[in-house]
Image (tube, rainbow, N blue to C red; front, side, top):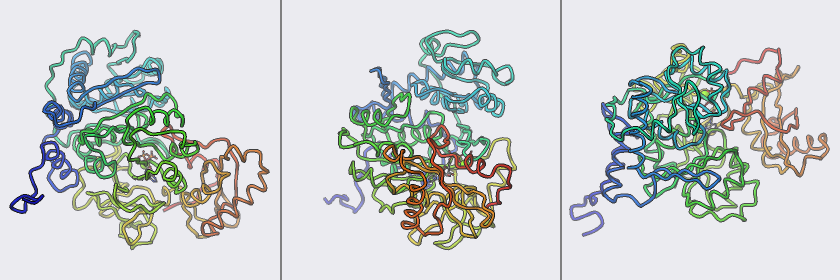
Length: 570
Ligand code: ATP
Ligand code: MG
């Protein structure tokens, strides 16, 4: 008998592979989405059984550490038990019903993962938020979402108290702390007392699972609603192909819990049977991250490009990573210099992916596919991704336009339902048969997408269109540049010109700024088309960023234009 068996058929797959293959087929749009689906019941509890039957290596499903030696390790079974207890807290003490919304604003504490799963078990809708939210941010989010409950830490509780009287829908406040606070339920105490018996809500695939506020890189954050299936099944294939996860992997994504990437992580990792590794990571510190990769058997790493940029500034030869074998990045453009330095120093490729809160993975460089440096990879199935013009017509390779996803005649299941309470914004995001991402790019004849910039960030100088990322990538190749942001600036003759805000590497901080400006301008003219060079330059100590680490070019641009009317883009 050959490897394919006596009848030319492949041998039967072992049980977990068969199950994961079915989820993957749904995720790729090759099999229909079931009518009922609940991630906790249909994925986590299934892995709990597979684990019990010996179908998984003895690694945890969840592994949390802090900087002081504390550690939490849960198998799928323990995660199931703890999250059932948490579900009883949400239903009992908090009185949450299916469809009720709950805000989760916690640092990287194990309770964040527990409560996320507990929301699914009860049918409640989670609304994660970042721990840096101010009173004003919290009020905006609680009012806009009409959340019935919030769970947060002792650090944020006073901010919630300061505004909760303005949030009439908010009925329950849950505290994750070892101390008490008037008006708050103590989650840890309630969890301790709660029963491990719980009947998971029977949710339909189309029922909402999460509402995300976008990063707010370009304006007020929007509420993006996702369903049990869009998130619960939408990441299985990309988890397998782009993040290359298997049941033997230990996956660390350094993201904040308030950002979509934290949910992307568990929706990618757990269906594939992988372990999610979490470091409390009180601050972003390159040495801290590198030491963690050396101390723990982490196989797979995900950080935003800004963090990889910090890591490659270090002498990586001083670290020996125990088990690292696959690295992914996304959330903003990866400049080629960072990828090359990482690869040169670690021998590992950096696989870039591109997506939005509104979607699952849109483009990626999956494992095994040839990488073209500077490209965000090819369309990620089941999406039909195209570059289209303002009317939604598909443009040929090489032509710059809007990155768009086909939503007609069939809207992909792994897609947001709408911007909540904002039908105008939802309608405005579509043109012809496509959803318009708001990002500009071109696609080459091999199907690779080349990101140019967000629509508003593209610079139009003397009728040349210039993407900030190209100029930033060119600047990054010069040793003086630690990081940069390129925006448009008003100009009496050209209308607008390229201006670069540059953070210098420490070795260059005392150089003559005028000479350095000239040198950098010449450098850009040499490495890219000369018309793109920054006519204006400013050296700054830091760049404005969102808490997820994305550069807010819009802030710099507004600063440049002041009261002058900015040109219309499109
Ligand atoms: P808002 O919509 O409120 O301005 P946001 O768009 O930053 O916020 P997210 O949904 O978190 O919020 O970010 C998605 C955006 O991030 C994409 O539309 C794109 O502009 C950018 N992005 C994500 N991945 C990449 C990538 N690999 N390369 C370039 N840009 C990326
Ligand atoms: Mg956006």
